[in-house]
Image 1 (cartoon, one colour):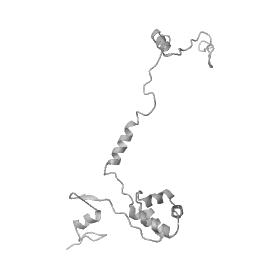
Image 2 (image 1 turned 45 degrees about the vertical axis):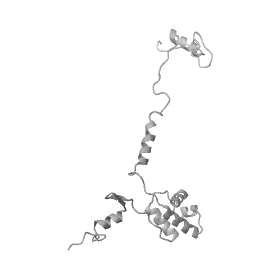
Image 3 (image 1 turned 120 degrees about the vertical axis):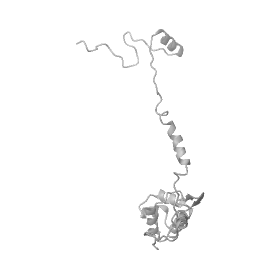
Image 4 (image 1 turned 180 degrees about the vertical axis):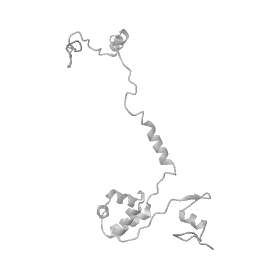
Length: 170
């Protein structure tokens, strides 16, 4: 049985047999490294994942700052209308949220004007509150150097277009 090692192995703190104790001070450690009494290995990338993900925060900030990726918010007018209709019924945000099967945080976001408008949620709110709520407009487009809403741009293109069908023939 040549492949087996039957020598004693130390699992505890003390030394067994001819095992040498490691040096305890920096100077003793440096001297042991110079004389070859101990060997050290350099570990590359030790310390974890911080270096791998350091650039992600910078890229996220760049995305947030660009105008192309900005989402439209629901706006203060919609939030104020929801709040007035809710308080007229003497409901809390939680009661309104449970009646439309949404979280109370969603109602809070709509009332503060920070929510991204969802037509389905606005429709649910209108049915529960029995009132028409102001719908936020589509984002503005730059036409000829000035910002215009989509409706204004369509009106300038041609007023003779009919809704829901092809253009009129003459």
